[in-house]
Length: 67
Image (cartoon, rainbow, N blue to C red):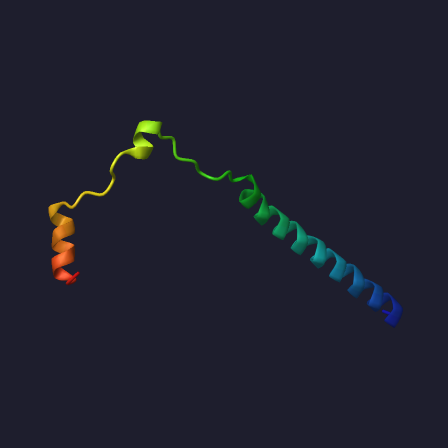
């Protein structure tokens, strides 16, 4: 095989590997783009209600961690 033919073969191989690499990166990025941000569905009443409750397990956590 001549040096010129080997060089051309090496370039073709590099182009093939570059194309395969770009295709894999593009395929991996598709799910990231397609995923929509999650949104909570709550009514106006739920948005203003009190959420914190100091239950027994919360009190136990505070006591054991000395808060």
